[in-house]
Length: 119
Image 1 (cartoon, one colour):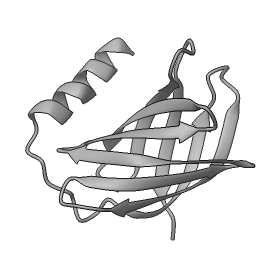
Image 2 (cartoon, rainbow, N blue to C red):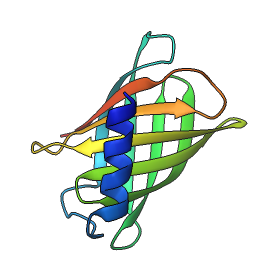
Image 3 (tube, rainbow, N blue to C red):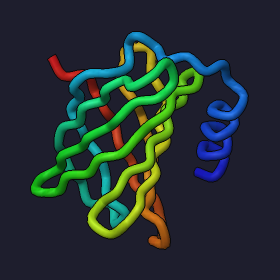
């Protein structure tokens, strides 16, 4: 997992910065919580510049919003969830989905998340 995180961070730091036209819009969310339990929901990614975006997620009765940055095929997002701050790192897939791992500040472990473009 550390290798995956390091690779995504490196991609964000060293890849050319340009917002891909195929990232953005509505997504279906499927993920696992820090304890391994599953969750589902929806998300919307809205480009706000050539390299940044806004992300809003709704899973069950929980909503979160934040900002994100795309570099190459890596998308990093920071968000506020109640009184906590979270971080998610996604890798853009050829089919337009985003495969990610996430954590919440000062909490042990990491969850997983897949965003699939909604039709």
